[in-house]
Length: 436
Ligand SMILES: *Cc1c(COP(=O)(O)O)cnc(C)c1O
Image 1 (cartoon, rainbow, N blue to C red):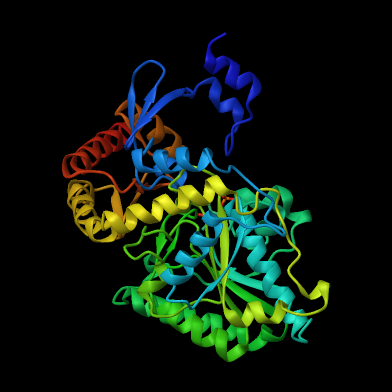
Image 2: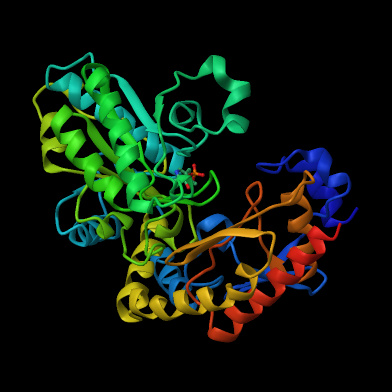
């Protein structure tokens, strides 16, 4: 049996109707090299989605590899209850410094959905500890995605992911998304944001007494199809959350770590949330790691003689030393290679590479936030995403459209020629998909 046959027989692949693999080929990757994935048969794919938005500095990055090797010779993991170690302390200090010490007290887990749940639990527990036990509900934006465990599904508003499990989920309320594509003729993205903020105010005015937190993906709602919005929404949301005593949770699992041009997406807004969730890119795409940063006010509400007032949540691999080391190596690259500055150039290259695509008659809403570029395709036939995915692979590109939205979210290593090549191949794949 080939590796592919063995995989289909033994591995239950994520986000996949397995039967589709009767026609859709599975690809076995043996090696990674910068932005390239190299398959068993020698074919190469440009990883234009950063392997589900996690890889920042290319596959098999020499610097991260070296740091991991060094750490592996010293300590791979130790229980984080009652014990600590250098990598977790340094990472927590560096992240707090990156928030200008507005947020500290890093609480660790291994995946994004767990970080969401930690923030939700901390918020409710904070209100309980401060004498407001009725505040147990959440509100999220229409089309929001914050993970797929049963708790995180409460604030994930994507029917395909939630419907089958509806009886298990205590769904949060949703309010209008500030998605700039909702602009009426003559309206700017900022106008849409102001309109959505008014809807949030109407909701909070009525429901603040039972609402613990608003959770948002700052600037880009990624998994719903790269819905981008004006930073004014977050400034207004911050003001409203303060006014109505509701926490603001910024889920930067996808948009953090430089993706939108600043290290944290909220840095475009001048406000800080009460909780900030990070995962995906934080370990450079090497190892599962997530964390929640919170304010001093939150932390102090748990600090007491009584055990039950503490945050007793835990995961076996909390603060794993290798994952923290990969994250520290990632932060070193950000500093030593002046990555945010260099990405300004890369962002411009991506924009230029998309110009011929923007001119295509079936393409609309070309939009960009730093190292995310997306466009929507008018395609009357169903199955656009699946057909485009297959055509892109044939052109040497790993691209996974969301519905009719195609997006680039590449690692921060592409040069100008690679950006241009990405643009050309994407256009070829698009034309082949549209011509049947
Ligand atoms: C991916 C993602 C998550 C969930 O992270 P997992 O590691 O897949 O559980 C949560 N929020 C956002 C915004 C994400 O993009």
